[in-house]
Length: 386
Image (cartoon, rainbow, N blue to C red):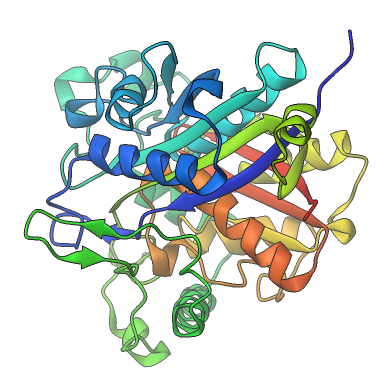
């Protein structure tokens, strides 16, 4: 069997809104998803009837983002009823998994045109389990671990295990804001952002998160969230957020036949598992697997987008992979600490940003990696084509 090559044609996203009090809190997640899917179809010029399937990533697929929200998004976006849709969750890496699923379907010949989207509204769907929904066997495991451990505590565990200091976490957080603000001022996010109109008629076209008022001095004054002797603060963590993103994955042959110019090809991917209590460093093994499958090393990577769930996990992950966390190749337009982290959206948001950075720098190889609640990691290697 001939293996088809999956390519990424384009990607778009909404701005990222802060949860509850942010700019997108009044907008339903399925409406956000439909908006970016419509924009992606319009921008690429692909006939909606050409789409074999829509794959939607959602971290917490319940409430307004339940009932197979991917199918609802497809209907709202005006895709033909003949286009099936599924919703997948790998929590923080859900829409990266959607891209991976589509790539695999292309490889085995089960289709050649896939819309991959990701959506999350922490404002409207929330994220917390009720205590009654927790399985006691997962809450207190024989080895003493807790599958449901709060993410803040996983970050604290990583900070202690790898001796990550509060000061360097704050410094990395400030870097994230500085880079994101510089990107906003330069207008480099404009090409990837689809403006959103809220219920009041306001047009939102900028991310809520980057803070011009942030400084190392202010970050140092923030209280810790993980006990009196803790190191994790709101300032060196990502914020709960709302948003949606969409990426078009096709077979290289079909893109050529339609006269569509792809921006990158998918080279390899990897996933990993780890103790849930230190989930933040799970990307280390996922990256190594993806690079090994691509016959590459970190030296081959021109841009590395590592999701900033917490500065506590970015610092040791980058170092374990042989990269200085302040290297200009790492998150050059800032990351989730500044921009926010709508769980289901982020994988596709990062991929969209990665495409833009590779093109702006005329780089070749891009790497995306994410940690995942519950003790997983995921990574994908792409190669720029256009």
